[in-house]
Image 1 (cartoon, rainbow, N blue to C red):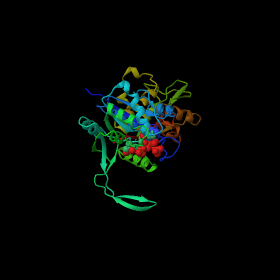
Image 2: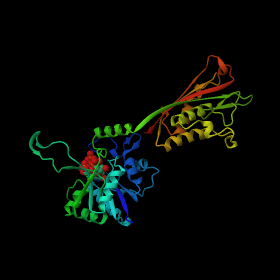
Image 3: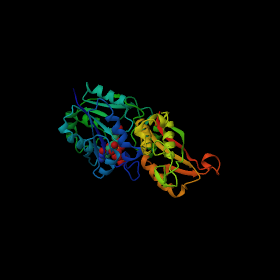
Image 4: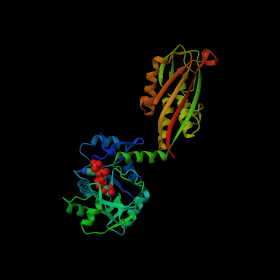
Length: 384
Ligand SMILES: Nc1ccn([C@@H]2O[C@H](COP(=O)(O)OP(=O)(O)OP(=O)(O)O)[C@@H](O)[C@H]2O)c(=O)n1
Ligand SMILES: C[C@](O)(CO)[C@H](O)COP(=O)(O)O
């Protein structure tokens, strides 16, 4: 069995894109560019491991961007892409891979089919590059004036991952120190070896400018859908008690609420809203009131469960809104604490959580102070 390692170079500064963060750490539909790129390779069954090369200033950014992914420690990069690749290759010596796929961190849409084509061609060739034929007419110009029209026949745009036999590309990189070569195919070519082309993909573009970042956001938004759903719950006041649980906060009151769990109507309505977004039934199906294990349970567990279901589908909670309906207790003094609590359970910024309250003007069961009702709305986005 041959061993293939993906080497992802992420030590650049992203000058052409600008801004304060290097482009590989910018969020793209909520996930850092680098995390998306790494996932393309971690998720590919033919890649044995993934190594990342980073700038020496970026260790905290790297740790945050790749939190929770199983990766070996990153390798420090160099002043140019070529230096970073060479340092990354040197650091792989202990792993002794047969093949290495060298990848720009700035290409977060490298698809499994492109990786497959590169790996398949590597069985026959010492180097393989995914590429696309040039479609526009090419001009060489000086000072804004065309000097010549360059025949485009036989011209290709090179992409990554570029695949190589590890020993060959390491030797070629060592021999190319001091030359200014913009990709690893050029390094192997300089060593006199032939490099094969396989089909690349238009979606596998490199994020270089702010317009590329916008294109990436649009591409991802087309692949996702937004869903909104509501939830509703009611609990009756108990004859005794000294507080009610509302949106995860204990609010002093002259009666408690009856319920199998802690009777937190706010969190129950919100849990149902999230389950509704997923078409995943209702809270009673997930936590049956007949099941003794949920007696007196703290309702944050129900909401955390719904969050977990959203995340397991690759989804993201965008916004939640809860309306508590009661004459008493007064909600206002506890509203900020409730927002903080819900935001904490859902891993959201506080400005993505809304908690409101209303009375029913003394009408109906809430008006007669027989119980508290809550309604909630949730918006999530999900992969299509
Ligand atoms: N010293 C460098 C320079 C570049 N790269 C990496 O090489 C890839 C392709 O390079 P490019 O798009 O040119 O990235 P930057 O060098 O960051 O961009 P810029 O030239 O705009 O500064 C990027 O993933 C980048 O992080 C690297 O690892 N080390
Ligand atoms: C390697 C590369 O992605 C091939 O297209 C590209 O050359 C790297 O980017 P740079 O802008 O040339 O550094």
